[in-house]
Every structure is written in C-alpha cells, then in structure tokens.
Length: 268
Image (cartoon, rainbow, N blue to C red; front, side, top):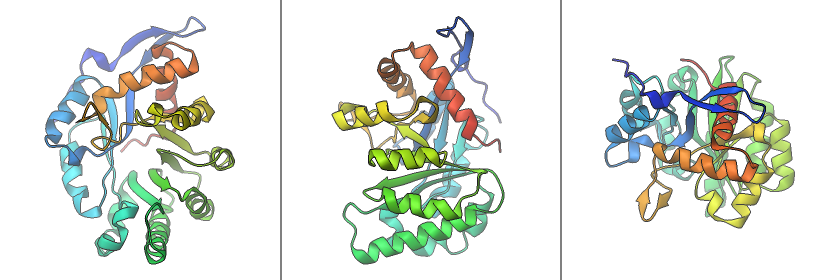
C-alpha cells in the first residue's frame, strides 16, 4: 500500500530571481537495512517527504531491502556489493545478474584501496567490471560508487563500460582536483554528507563541486552525530550547511539539489 506523504513533501520558497519554488530533500546514499529499526527510519523519511536511495552492501540483503521499500514511492532500493566485502562475498554475485540488470538503482559498488592487499584490489576490480558489464544493458540506471583511494581506477573502469543512460553518483568523493574535473567531464554527480563538511578538505571539496553536480547523502548509519547515527531526516540540516557554502537560502539549495536528483533519477 502506498503511503501518503505529509505536507512537508512540498515546501514553498522563493528563488533569488523571485520565482516560486516547490522543493523537497534527497538522501542518495543511506543503508536503511543496517539501522536497528529500519521501519522507523522509513516512516520518518516518509513523514518528512525525503527521497532516499537505499543502498546495500551485499546482494544477499537486496531482497530484504527491496521488501522494506515496497509501497513507499520515495524509497529506491539499490543492489550492491561493497568493495571491502568483495573477497568475502564474491560468490554472492552468482545468480544475481538478473537483479543487477533489472534494478534501476545499483550501489554501493566500487573500489577501496585504503587497506587492501594486491589480491583484494584485483578481486575488487574484477567484481566492479562484472557489475558494470551487467549495468550496460541499455536501460536507465543510477549507480552509487565508492572510490576511497581508488578514484583513478574507478574512473578508468567507468570510461569504457558505462553508456550515457547510466548515471553515476560518486559517493563521499575524496579525489584530486584533476580527478574531480575528469569526473565532471564524464557527467558524474557527487553526493556530499555531513561528515565531509566537518573537515577542511571536505568543505573545500564541496565548494569545488559544480552546483549542478552536487547531491546530498547521509551514509547513515555509518555517519554519526553525538554518538548517534544520522538518518534521512537529517538531510535538511546538511542542506542548510550547503546553502551557507553556496551563499543562498536553504529553500534555493534544496531546489537546486533536487533538480540535480531529477536529472539522474529513474522512475521504476
């Protein structure tokens, strides 16, 4: 049964040009299945009218996450395999090709070289190339990608394998200015979270990302505030911080970010 959104779903504001704005908030990277009470998190997100891409860390939990999201128009379940789990869970890819092909949202996938051995890096690249080949089937998709200390290889993997109808969101991006420019040239989006804005380097990165390529995320429950996991209902707070960086109102920042999300959204 579809759940009706509260009046918070539509908000009124005025742009710098005097235009009347209708806007709401987006969380493009949240691990709904890993909260102690996922249903509570979902209900809160619905009440606040927040659109959420519910990423997963392994194919084996995709069915569970898809079930949690069923009936909620603002929740988008994504099938993924986190790079740090590839060596341990690579076997889960067997028999999952159809899920990756059919799902409009894929994530969390990618590469993480922060503590990986040479063999683990190899496993990660094999898994990423396989998943990308499944996603290049001519259907519209949104991919949320992890690229910690591996941005160059992630971009290299994307270049030959991903068609234009596949939209890329680089989650928690920490690459160089040159890598940022290359990713922008590829049409990638970048999801920024609260933890990033707590550091000088993170704020600098947020300022460097073109406004037309920036999206919001929580990465909950991994990101915490005051020793408590944040959740999709914390996105307005994050949006207010981004508005401050941009020098605009929160209404206008939310409007612009949601416009970016509409460019890479897929209606299932």
